[in-house]
Image (cartoon, rainbow, N blue to C red; front, top):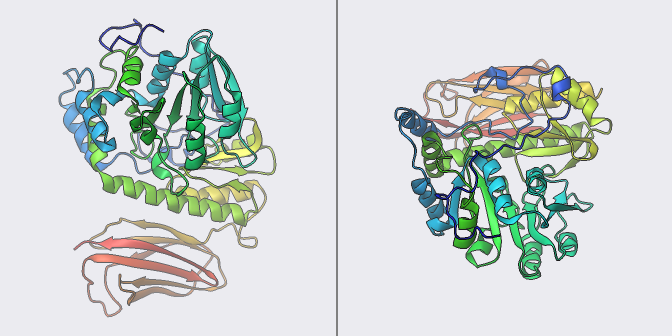
Length: 472
């Protein structure tokens, strides 16, 4: 390779970067609810792309609106301000960041920098497949290493698969589609045992969703001088999938190689503005993570009620075992309005993205009906607090609950100190979904002050709580 001295200003390729298209098994052959391109009701049930159901942050939306007014002007050709902001976020120098049109472009750029005819890529199987596709396009050979019995990337096996021709090792952490992680201790051992002349690339698209103490970002290996590149995206937790913005974190030398085959101006003015604003909106990021955890709880409870095996998830999607043909179940789900993913040599497994609370509740109901099973002893209703909206609220909020019939239901509002404010429901309700209004008043009809309140739903041995914020 002789491109180390080149920059983005010296084009090695005259054409724009080609996208690697992903095959969505079954969707093209089955009747499914059509989906629009905007966040409308038409997107309900779109659980196949691991998108953020909250959408972009308000700050990012505002920044894009401002940038749109200057849509007649070319963007910062080299995304300098954006890269400086990303560098500040990670505590590295700006020349260690390369921003591009989504992780899709960054994967291609990394492959172009390190993979060529006669070279070799070592990667896991199953995993996100684009890097392998780019390797093949560049004439490199590919060595696939199966995940272990716990559906985790086996770093020891990957180390053993490295040969004298290996140029790049591609890892995805958390992995897609299994939503599992490899441990930080295993990664340390792997990096310390790595033969010289090999670069490791780690795709951390789902980094923000991980809660495990056994995980850490691999950016620290970059700062410590290891031969490693980290790929990040704004598509997932930041909710900018349609805006197309991603980046790499690597040494200055590797970053120069990655930049060398990138056309200038690949990141639009709107995308740069949105990404800079999104980095500053920590509240939206926290809301995204919180919603994701609630959605996964609903899926887990539903899978358990339906007696379905599932792979514990560290991302915004889950894989579960249907116990039958996943493609058949996926086709039926599509007819019911829910698009999911199947494949990866796992014929009984479905990957489902987390969505809104309503989507998760209704997805489990539809899944139970399709499988001929119903949670809760024959009733297809799923117990829980489906939704609280708006949240925050100023005048009144609607609390949507789903319950089974035949037992007393209590829906109680408590203040932050645990004192009871009002019991909205205390009696037997019909099975199904009910919308309950709280007008921000206590049991005596007095308006309560601004603050955070706890909504507690109880029925028999089941209970669930949600927080709501009142702003006067």
